[in-house]
Image (cartoon, rainbow, N blue to C red; front, side, top):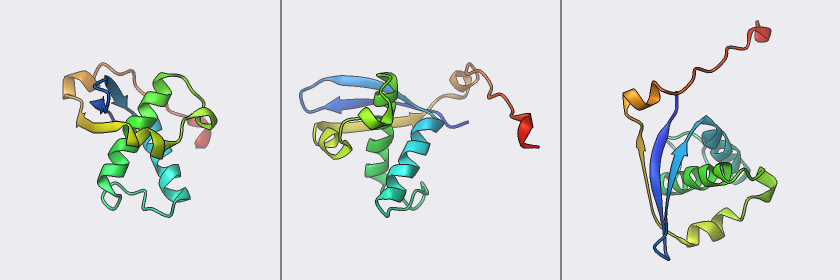
Amino acid sequence: MIRLQGVVVFSDGRQEEVEVRQAEYAAWELYALRRGLSSRPDQSPAMTMTRYLAYAAIQRGELLPPKEWPDFEEWSLQVDDVELADLEPGEAANVPPTVRDLSAG
């Protein structure tokens, strides 16, 4: 299970807590592939990936469909810092399990 939690610190002093899930990693992969970047975490530009994960988490939290997301590069210019860390094992255990899709065989 992929889960990170963290804080985004904006240039104006605002702070926003984020939780990064599998959906944000999928959004990062699509963004990276569209721009000719590696989507693999061990080969990705680390800071860009970190910021994009936080950016995608904020957009998901605001319930915006991807076509309505603000421009990532403009958003990133308003950010001073992004701190992400793995959820503690006990915290991840509180997440409901993913339902297995039996139709795939």
